[in-house]
Image 1 (cartoon, rainbow, N blue to C red):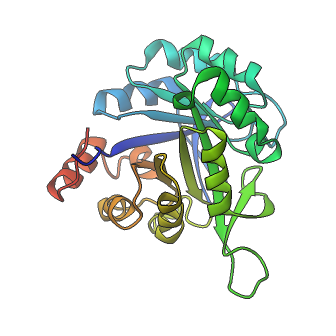
Image 2: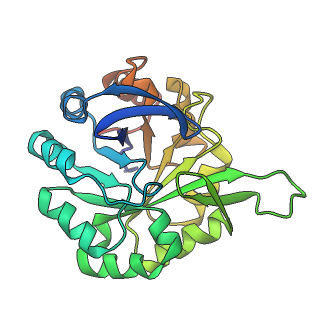
Length: 256
């Protein structure tokens, strides 16, 4: 039996509001996180991901206030990322009812944090988010390169080697976002998704660029993703979660 694919709305949070940008900038306000979370649970989301997108850039921790409000209302597992710097930050979130934490910049800066968190809380509680961009051939940089700090900082690291290391250190899953595709609605970066998914055994969630039902299908079939994450298409009502699941099911993909 092939594993069912998850459909996951992503809520980018800034100053306690859900926002949505393109290529990580030009944010527009969408709605209140609790209201959005409740609506998505009702629609049949398999999980929710909340990313406090300005937390790392502003050098502060995740806002516990809205997390607490969301935890009281959601009926599906949810992950929180953004500004998580150490296992104490994680503990505070788990205490509020968060099911998984997602680390990105902190993991790159201090890979030992992955190992420590995995040991302390279990791999199933730990998501490592990887943001990537594509470089031109002959640029002397990795074709698929890891970027951090909200995509503002290049690392010179190859995405596939970093994904393998993340798995080795004990991450339970990878959330992979293409910075180039983010918010464009032109489709996921299939090359990047597939390269990572084929290199590791842990689940890989495709993120960045969903614009059509077809894109969700491509991420699973061509990109080998275990889950598809989207923001704009769900926030602005272009595609509903039941519609996305129905479409995948009709195409022969097992969904929850």
